Image 1 (cartoon, rainbow, N blue to C red):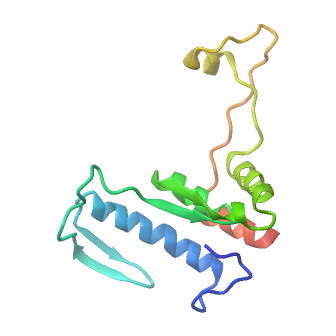
Image 2 (cartoon, rainbow, N blue to C red; image 1 turned 120 degrees about the horizontal axis):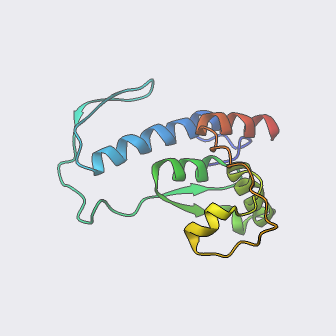
Length: 150
């Protein structure tokens, strides 16, 4: 998705991101073989279904492009699809990747004894448990915050 400063087809960046999230959800439902009825402010589907099912199971590989905003990683995580980080080749791209992942994941946390036991890692007795990480924000909420910050 383009940055907020780059208009595409005269649709603002926040609307583009919301539409990407909405459309991807519908597309994945179609890929899973569902019959989809969906009403949106920009498209309508009435009992839509694919005429030819995806050859691969559960469907072909799907990825979301990501540049500088957290919208791509958030949408990819929400729908369980891959991500293409195209900002890496742009000036400031590598720096923005770390900032984007931090905005989604939150600050790093120390492993607790419970998480170490699950992964098989050892935990020293001096390691104090840390509170569970807050779930990531909704895609729209994160995009709105990004647009305010940039």
